[in-house]
Image 1 (cartoon, rainbow over the protein chains, first blue to last red):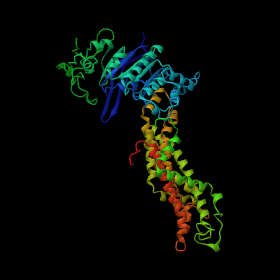
Image 2: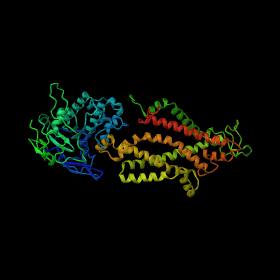
Image 3: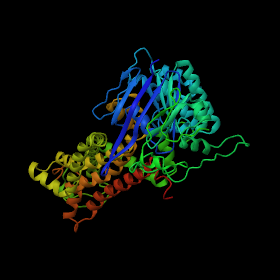
Length: 315
Length: 286
């Protein structure tokens, strides 16, 4: 089965004083229709930049992206140019991603107006969308500052899904929402996913969300995927020590659960000075001599399970 | 702000909480009313000469006295307001429109264009306005249009810089990026998303700019670079009065008071508007 989105060795680099910084350093990823893939990583690991690059908001330095089998071309500024009717992006800040001087009705009509969808009456569509995400018609004439975070997020979901895209890229869809609202938003997304056969790429640092929604996951560290695969498998059997440390650091609701044994020390190294060899060796509890000098190429374990480590954990 | 309300209602409720701003608003409305109604309010033709009654003080017939040619000063002040109003209306709206265009180009366009435009703005701003005006008048001769032209050219950079800064700040905001991700064209982003979000600071700037423009027109007319006699302007009234200050102080007082009133009124009103619309400054100094 061909993938909805197929990313091969994508790179994003920005010029800095005296050189370049590679923010996304060769990532590969397949997303299928109806599937949710999560990208997990600490702040600064390049998750958001990857999302922006896929939506044509950040310049791409290398690699290929295919959407529904079609190779995406780059524009003059090296940005990818996906079909914006079929790829939708949701930003982290639910209120900030709405124009403060535009009513909800107008914001929801935007996608129809931008793409001049002839069959639709934008204002009528806006009301239909509001209903779909569980907001009443009386929200139509509100401004973003008159919405709560959860309501603004629902409006964001409605706008992203207005043109029935095939792929939704959601950057921290639950950031800033309290836990019950997080659940509502995630359930709304899964429900709409089932209705529309949508492929979703979720970017988050919240592992509970990944556990709840993701079929597959990728763990990002310094712009690379150090491990990716089936999310249930990764949760039960992390291969890469960084993955294990992340999972161990995640608080568990079970009071009897043992706290994780692996603890991360030190800070994330600067992207400007990537450590030689395995880039995680500066913080890895199981570091050995080989890791300091050699970069571990990808190891493949079972179907679609990949990681970059010389000494994977066995559990 | 919990319940929905429009821009005007928001402004009004903000003004009600700010006595100085309200005073400014009342003063501004009063001046505008007097100026617009000048042809009906003025007791005499401002150009009517009566040499038998020159440089008289206030009286029942001439509330503000008469000037060196016996013209009624009150009528001249009222008509002078029309000149001031016309100059500030035309100059500010043209300067704002051009500044808006250039500022958005600089703020959203490629880096080289931004550099070129900013150097242009700074070059224009580096001329002393009066010297610049003198040079232009030397080329074209004094007229009201020259005054308007000079004010437009020297004001464009002020508006353009504000627009440029605001546009640059906006272009990295999530809602603009979201529009880009949805595939909106640059023109659409500018018209529907940038413009409505920079309009408020722009109008605040314009209202604070009125006194400067009125003062500039008066200054240039005072120097004889503006309106040509016998057209009344607050600047030329001051100039007439200045020459005959020993004989009568009334022309100077009558020409000066509206200038002071315009300056105070628009400044208070503009500052109040700024406090209402700029959340970063709101509540800071009270």
